[in-house]
Length: 206
Image 1 (tube, rainbow, N blue to C red):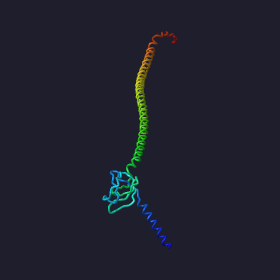
Image 2 (cartoon, rainbow, N blue to C red):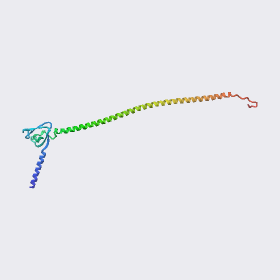
Image 3 (cartoon, one colour):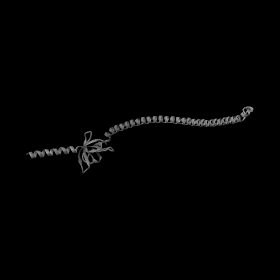
Image 4 (cartoon, rainbow, N blue to C red):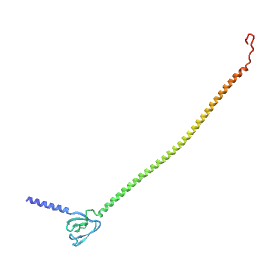
């Protein structure tokens, strides 16, 4: 008896599991609409059309005819061709999410561009400031080089003047020295003739 009860419970559990697995969520393909029939083929009466992207629940599959039994979002139950059933969420449901994602991407891109523009503006300003400083330093360097060249020319000119003056002074000293020496020699030759000689006495002394 207990064995029979266990078998019954096991069978019920298997049936419930099969039913849960059988009722799977699917979607009508986005690129078309299809007709819903009373039975698992086109020979049965059409109950109506099911628009593309409609969410349906698969209840049963007929592998011989390739039709599946579904329930649509309006509560209708019928058979549709399995070629028009897709695992992908319908575009009608995906579109809002895609639009939201696109909006977020555009916003992030705009922020990135704004940040990039601000960084570029800062870099451009810094570059212009550096270029101005470089130009000022180059002008100052050019001015200093000119001043240095002028100073070097003046120093060379002063040195030339000093060398000329030294040569002139040395020549003057040689001239003065020669004149003094010549004057002394001449004076030594003339002086004896200018001094009168004393007459000698008889005793030989003047």
